[in-house]
Length: 237
Image 1 (cartoon, one colour):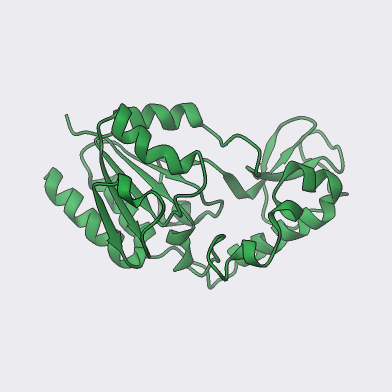
Image 2 (cartoon, helix red, strand yellow; image 1 turned 90 degrees about the vertical axis):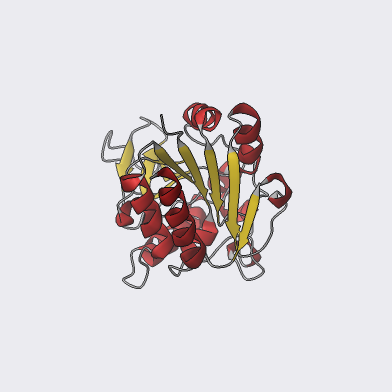
């Protein structure tokens, strides 16, 4: 039986599609305070400011210049051609994996193109702006919608499923992630201790967790990921 593969992706895989990363010197958190737009406390204090931040990001994501790149496409090919299970766990809230055709996918930090009602807990696809007067399509209550994203201080989604997959995988591949945000930064340790996995990192430069990987590959995701997928598929043939 072919051992499963778990792939973790971060902002670095979407950078080549035209989306800003968070932690680079010129990234989003260098321009906007986390405390102002990405915590439950920020939403309670100034919900309109938070809505506007995500409205702007939603508009950028849906602009015609933002498209999946070669790294996204290579992971779709891995899922379709690898004889075993491939699970992609992304920290990204964009929809570029879906647009490329990825199917076995977990958005552990939520999705930018969805809103959640704090009153009735329903989740809705959302591609337009929202503000403090917007009504929930489910229950009709105004002012209780929030972005369906995981803010700092909140628990990521589907952690049980992710940990179960890490415990079974034979290969763990980390792409374009800083290695500083937990729990994702700890996935390599879980994969190696729980699943005895072979761990590969692909990033523009070494990260805080690079020493935990069996291999590190430096360079753009659009170059590194297709080459790694070719190797994984050849090894499984």
